[in-house]
Length: 605
Image (cartoon, rainbow, N blue to C red):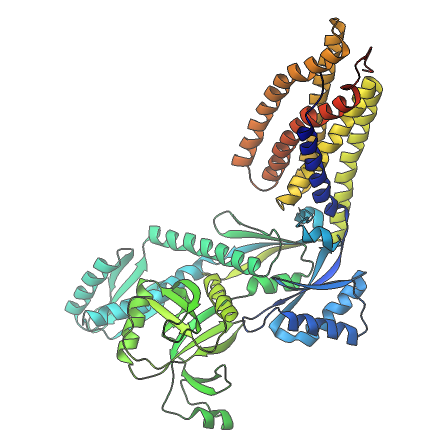
């Protein structure tokens, strides 16, 4: 009468086995570790780097518990923090500026668990420790930077329309154009108003010093500031994601501030380095009137030029004036040169950038043009091809002795781009791992004590069926942790509160079932019929009560943010697992114990 078919037992057993496997990694503690990641596109995280790290540690007689290579870099586990700090200093000194050596914490779970992708949950800043930054975006600088771009745009526009002017310059957030002819000023104002409707024009000066001042209209200025903030957010996300910091929080706060939280990063200086990392592109013309070899040998760099070396080490004199910068890049994708088949980066420019590039290539056919990648203040000439023809359309191809991986990295760095406006750290807070451990212990103990109290009450009050309910409750907690681990969710203190609340709520379903069985026994039904009716008739009530809570949880997730969402996630998942454990798991146990007894006289409930 109360028997499950075999497939149902097997299904429940398989789910419980998977739950245990994916819960296990969370019981292994995190150990001190050092993470080595490339700081420049020229540096690679590969087997050679792994060997360098191992060789350096062995030469210095520093013991380590494990070293491995993953897609983000090389990670080394150490037995204690003293050894970790010693190794970090050693590796930072030996690997140089091409690599970022940062302190980290890694799980000590066995490799076979990692092989089946059973990984521990991420812990939030309040549990794991890490760094918290509040960054203030310089909105005035964003507007000034926009005005700087308009200087070049207006110069090009006036030149294309053959309007004579005596000079153009930027004064703060205003672009000032000087004229000697009132008719030319009036004509310029007419053309600018037609092409740049976001600019407000104001005529100034008299006689031969006629000025036309162009400033952004208030709505356009606000739009520039909003775009600068959004670009800075995107850039920060790209930089942090690129370096593999797990589950960072990067979000806007107010109209001009950004919050950055990096869980697990203990080194504040390195965290600042991560945020400050950038790579941008500059296109300049090559100076072919002077001998670069002579300049490199004597050190006498001609006025208006700079000396760089290409990837072969050949010196190259490049003009100081920048033709185009990475600000005009809208997209960068790795690919291949259609003619040679070599790896290349395909760059797409915005409208203004495309027009400038077209003009420059038209006016300098037969000359060389250098494409420089500037990263951490150091410039590298990627390629310096000869301009064969005018290039229009805004699509530029960068190629030159790079492999597929380099092309991908350069495209990634260009997409990450530069900050639209400078930022200043106005608040800096470090949460130590010891405080995080204390928070974990408090959260774990509160859940454990609540569970033990419920287990004692249920076992005493409902006897054998109370014990079954406790087993189902433990299954619920295991399954909830397993699902959070599978989703690689980030557990925070509000998340632990959600788990504790779930434990309290999950027992309600078992209480409803047991009380229903008691009622059926009091009505004179046989024990087997009481068990059957208890589970069948309590199901609707359990479903109704949990659906209302589930709706509230979805609302919290939809409308909340940060910690509120973390609480909502654990609450919603906990409700789903509690329905499964209360209805399926506890009934399977009850059926195994009592379902096969033909002569069941009474139930211990």
